[in-house]
Image (cartoon, rainbow, N blue to C red):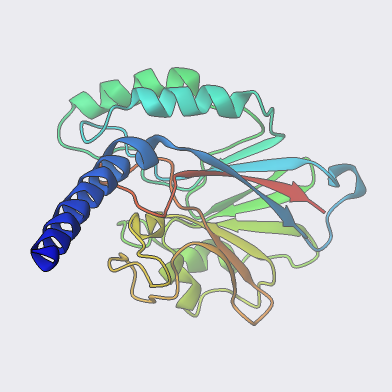
Length: 245
């Protein structure tokens, strides 16, 4: 009888834990935004930019797959931090139909403002910081050679790209510096002490956070603000604030 009682308690305990974990992964963590602060050392950075902040927002995924009021609320929280620069690294919508364009316009009424531009295979020098934007690796306009061939290593450079797999291509023209990416969402689900079971990249070491590429480049992968599906476990949504130095 004692054995039966033990098995019964263990079974219902496991079921209860599974239910609680499921609710947490569905209703709590997907909306538990984390503001991650990172020091960013940039070669040739002008003195007047030391201590300035650059905010990275990535993978908003406005659409019908989760309540996008959460994105608006997150933008409002981010605005209070008054970043000097704001960069967006792709995936604005989860497109099903034209309704998403209307939804995106509604969300972007609350966009976080700073010194910011939309760059596709382009560069823009903003007050001494030269921001280079690469088009999406999977997009029709992907052409990193166009802009990286113009690289001037005497400037304070920063590269934005959506998919971190671009880091493994032979297009960098001896670039040494930071690369900000998104796309992976950190896998959205990461069992403790294990790698995420699903990562939409060829190079599976490209998950999330700071990655030293060991050639003078430093990759940072943002875990995404939005979600492809409303589920996260051990991979909280993120907005990153870099302090320039």
